[in-house]
Structures are given as structure tokens and as C-alpha cells.
Image (cartoon, rainbow, N blue to C red; front, side, top):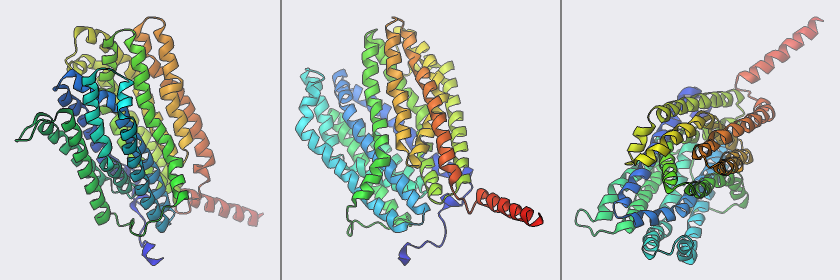
Length: 478
């Protein structure tokens, strides 16, 4: 159809890779850092209510993180498929993928709202019998679940913007939601500006307000600026094959993100056998490391559509350049993070009012765990790249090794020695194993996929034509 013909190719197929990667990644890196800041600030405000309020919200976190995992994982599938269809010039199918992606995450919202009705109380009772903690947890999670549509739509619209290279608008919507959340937290929690104090319920309301505004901005930016997608829900029809394709790429991401919650629970059980302070140190580390890892995740959000587009356009040279630069930038960021954790662990811990015992445990812990940062930078970039090729199973295997298959058994085995410092070494050990597996997968992908692309518009196609021409000349001379 004429309306789907594009006179000019998307910038992901033409712009110099370094400039393209920076332009698409930096906005996402900034927005991810804002999200990391929000997570810390949000916890600080809730903790000012009382310790039981913070505990109740913490117990609700696994469900909240699972909602985000499903929304983001599905978003990865939507992003990769839309960008690939655009690269293949299949514009109508790109629109259909966008429409089905929105529909899918709306179904996910309804699923969690229904589960909240059925299993909310049992979920908290399985973790504690304290009625005050349960009250705080239920107040928070009820709001997050019943009014969580904004979160699912926010992530969907952000991924659609990213899939066409409009990461700047994605950053604006996500950043605006986070900032509004931070501003509304003290107002609704403590009852400022004449409003009643709503406690943990106020924290949840602030969260869904921020998510809903971010979703509204995402929809507006898509309709106004995303010219390559003309999706319309009025004529929408669910397409089972598209939903399957989204899940084929997205489910590994969903599982990978869900692993983080499982890892935290398992590590807490291992560490609390030593002392509750060890568990607190691990919690602080997890918050601090987000400032190092979040920029990598933001860059990955920029890389995936670039790889997906050029994979669809069969431009092997551009794909290789994206991978090279992505690894280079990731290693640089992780190197800086490693230096900070190695040189300033005491200062980092002191931001959380660390006790002498916490410093005694935390300083060596920060230094040991951070030795895996540089290796993690490589594996995280490669894992996301495999998803852009539709090889979500490779990404899942790497994440399982990093967070479950190797890490947890090693941590448990080290704990049996009675030396807490040995437990922290599970991180660099598991990361080293994942690097080896990652290198093997990269070799397979390069040989069987990237090198086989017919880059008729790039250097590889020209080299093949020149080689064939030379062979013909030599044959004629003979």
C-alpha cells in the first residue's frame, strides 16, 4: 500500500554508527539513571514512616518487579520486531506489531489486577504474621496492581519510540514520570500542601500518577513524532503469530529480569545465616550498583533497535560496528564503576548511615564484588545483542549462568566454609564462566548469521562483487 512506502531510509540504516549509538543511547542512559535515583529516594521517604512500612513495601517489591519484568520483557520483543520489520521495509507488519504489542501489555495489566484480588492477602501471610507489616504491604500493592495500566503502557510506548530511533522522546516521558513520582512522594505520604497524610498508600499513588503521566506523554510523542508507525487501535485485530513472535523474543527477557528477584531472595537467605548486617550490606550494594549497571542497560536499549534494523536490512558491517562500540563503551563505564567501588567503599556505605559493623563487612564486600563489573559489561551487552537477532535463548542461558546456575551454588558452597568474604567471590566466578559461554555464542552468531548477511549496500557486498570480478578477469586471461 502507498501509505507504507518510505522515500528515505531510517537513520538507523544510514547515520554513522558511533553518532547513531550515542544519540539513541545517551537519552536512555540518563532516564535509567533517573530511575535508579527514584528507587533510592522512594525508599528513603517510605522509611521515614517507620521500619514496618519499609518492610511492607519491601515484601511487595517482588510482585512489583515481576510486573516490570513482564512489561519490559514484552517491550524488548516489540522493540526488536518493529525495528526489524522497518529494516525489511515491511511497514504494514511493523504497524501491526506495534498494535499487538499495546494489546499484549494491556492483557498483562488485567492479569495482575486479577491476581491481586485473589491472592494478595495470602501472599503477605506467607512471609509474615505481623498485621502492621501486612497492612502497609497490602495498601501499597493494591494501588500498584489495580492502577498499574500506566506502567505497562508507559513501557510499551517507550519501546515503540526506541524502535524508530526516537530515544530522546522516550527519555522525556520516562524522566518526567520519575521526577513527578519523586515530587509527589513527600506530598502524599506526609500530607503536605493541605492534603491528608496517606503513608504507604500515598507512596503507591505517587508511583501510579508518575506512570500514568509518562504513559500519556509516550502516547502523545508516538502520535505526533513517530511518523514511521501509523498504528490505529480502531481497526486493530489480534494476530496470534505476532503475539508468539513477541513472546519468542520477550520471554527470555522476562525470565532474566525475574531472576533478579529470585537471586535477591536466595542470597538474603544465605547471608542472613552469618548476620542480618550482611544482608543489609547486600541490599546497599544492590542499590549502589544500579548506578553503574543502569547506563549499560540504557545503552542496550539503544543498541537493540539498531541491530534489529540493520539485521533486517542485511547490513553486516554496521552490525559489527555496533557490537564493537557497544562493548567498548560498556567496558569503559564498568572500569569507572570498578575504580569507585575499589577506592571509595567506605564513603559509599556511609551514605546509608553505615554502622562500624556494616563498614567492617561492607568494605571488603564492595571491593570483591566489584571485580566482576568489567566482565559483566561484556556479557550484558552481548546478551542484549543476541535478543536483537531473535536468539533470546542465548540471552537466557547467559543470565541463568550469571545469576543462578553458577552464582548461587558457589555462594552456598563458600558459605559452608564460615568465611563471609568468600561468599562475595561467587560474583566474579560466575561472571568469568558466563564470559566464556558468551564468547562461544558470539562466535556462533558471527559465523552463522552476521557473516552470511548479503550486505549489498555495504562493504561486504562490494568486496564480494570485486572478488567475483577479479576472478572473472583472471579466468579470461587464462
